[in-house]
Length: 145
Ligand SMILES: [Zn+2]
Image (cartoon, rainbow, N blue to C red; front, side, top):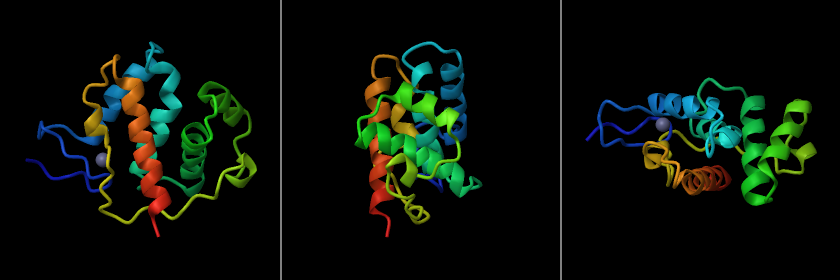
């Protein structure tokens, strides 16, 4: 049994694993541009960033919030959204038609789904698990006082 991640609460079966290491593996898959990972990079990045907000600016977190909210709550097409967010980087959540960024969940929040639950990002289950991970992240942010 290892200590949970102080930011997202993830616990790994392998005590040598960390969130950052697992995210590095996922980024390598994303950047290979192979599916199902490549086209979902923005969602994976946004989810990881919101669960690990330390050292990120409010503007960075707001962009992640817009991405997850528009895709999982509003049902936006992720590729079109990512393209329009790249071309208009300074819009606020309100300008994207999304509620403003809530206050970050308190320290030691344990998300219902963490990167540990995504295992080794198996191609068969990745799309479903990514959605569960993203929705759990939104739920915790939306529930924060
Ligand atoms: Zn973590």
